[in-house]
Structures are given as structure tokens and as C-alpha cells.
Image 1 (cartoon, rainbow, N blue to C red):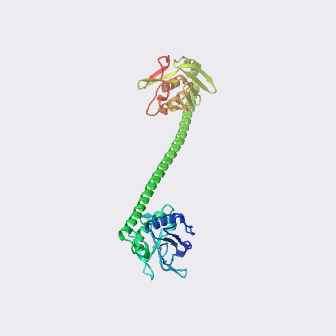
Image 2: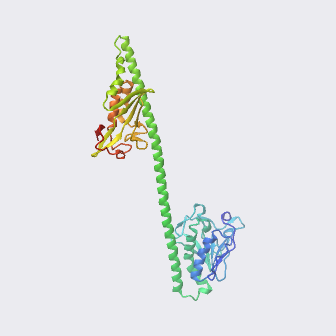
Image 3: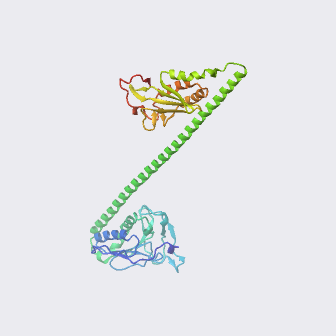
Length: 405
């Protein structure tokens, strides 16, 4: 029912061209916005203007020296006896080319009831108002629209209806038509300028909203990929430990089988592995501690695009369970120990399984040679931090381990 949607009728809001101080809001919603529009039109056209709201969609036509606008109302009661909907409500998604709020996109329908005014159609041929004497009726719910759109909707409605109202005012009958048309044209130009400015603001806000949504989506995708990479790295390391454990079980089974056949156990020579590690030219120190073999390397030098970079000395921790950790002892860049090592976790790629198998077979020398070769290799296509972040090596770099890329 219309009476459920319309606010109670408030006292009219009137503006006279001779007044300079703002009038009282008179209980009208958005009174300050509406009064500013009325004052501009009243001053320029030199006529009093009033704004009225109806009760249950009915606002009696007013007389006098002013031009009156009636919001969401008719000059004849649309509801009789508080129950009979004499004038139906129709869907009106747009008025004056401006989208109406979803909560207030209904309008009073055109009709031939006794006392109805002359219909007004907007530029899209939608019925948006009626005129009756010096009264301009608004068929849509102006006061329930977004506050930013109320002034321009009111202005466009006045621009459409005032040419029909002003000739009926006694004070304007003697005014030259061209002078009146010039002022009405100026007001229309102001209205269109305001709408263009509002549209520019809306486009900017929409663009900013879109950019924020894209940034949030990218940030969400980054978080997802970081979590997925961490999960996959943990899984790959677990598989490497499983390979090392299974390889060790396989080696132990073969050893026991050879013992049962009475063959000599080759593991008796395993004690020489540590000496062989210390004999490697790239290794400065080798020791066994806490279930792992720790190796300290010579400075690693890398040549990239004609320049040499010193990556520093590294500590290689070869765990008996198949884990590998590589730490930069001298030239760590934030969390990066090496272009392909982050937080001590190397990105070994396809050689990871081979290293795990070698560690499972206690072939620490072979595993160390593979890892040294890994440290001496940088690949620009998949490094985690470019080698350019490390210092260039001077001519006195000395006896570092050099490799070209």
C-alpha cells in the first residue's frame, strides 16, 4: 500500500527570492539539500518556491504567488478510505536518466481520475510528474533516493516542469519570454554540469573499487600460493626422507644378505667417508654432530653476464634421515642464503631424489659433490632472488670456487 511507503506530511518548505538567510528545515527529510536547490532557482527566476510532501500520496494543489513542487504525491487522493488503492504503483527503475534506489523504485501510475494534472515525460518517455496550475507533482519517491542524487533529481524535475508553471504565476506574466528562457537555460546547464561532475566521481569511485578488488584478489592469490608452496615443500622433503629411509633399509637388507652368504661387508670401509669429504677441494671442514654431517665450503664465486659475484661461504648439513639444509655463513641477503636457497631450504629440483638416495646409501661424498655443483649454479629463470643482490667479487677474491652461468 502507498500509505506504508510515504512519510507523514510535513510543513511546506518555502523559499522567497528576497530572503538571504537559510530557512528552517520544516521537518522535511534532506531539507538542507532541497533548500539549496530551491534558493538557487528562486533567486535566479525571482519567484517564491515551495516544497511539499503528501500524506498517503495526496497533496492538495496550492495557490498563491509561488511555484509548488509536491514529492511523491498526486493532486487527487490515490488511496480512498485508507484501503482502496485507487492509483496503482508501477516499477520505475530510472527517472530523468538517473537510476533510482532499489528500495524506492516505484512510482504512481498515470491515470484519468478526476483532478489529475497534465503528465510530464522525461527524456526516456517515462511518466515522472504532473503539472496542475502552479503545482508540479513528482510521481516517484524523491526523498528515499540516495542523498547524492536528490539535488540533481530535483533540479531535473524542476527543469522539466517549470516552463509549464511559470507562465501561470501572476508575477511572471509580464516578463519577456526570451529573458525567462535564458534563465531557465542557465539552470539546465548548471544541472547538466552537476550531473557530469557526479558521473566523473562515480567512474573514479568505480575504478578505485575495481582496483581495490583486483589488489585484494592478487593478495589472496599470493597468500594461497605461498601456503601451497610451503605445503608442497614440506611434502617434497617428506618424500626425500622416505626415499632416504627406504634406501637405507634396502642397503641394510643387502648387507645382511651378503653376511648370510659369507661375503665381506663393504660397510667396513665406510669410516673412510669422512676423510674423503675432508679431502674434497671445495670443503674446508667436515664434522659429524647431532645426526648429521656438517660441511663448511670455500667461498663460492659465480659469473653472470660477464660479472663475478661472491656468494660467500656455506654450511651444508646432510642429515642421516635425508634432509638437506644449506646456510650462508658470510653473505646472507635477508631470508635468502643463495639465489636458489631460502631460509636454509634449497630448491634442488630434479636432483632432490638423487641426493636423498645417495644419503640413504651413506654416499656422502657423492651427495656433497652434487650439492657443491648446485651452489655453483644459478639459473635466472627460476631463482628466488637475483644474484645481482650479492656483492661483486674483487680481483683479490682469491681461491673461491668459480662457476659460469
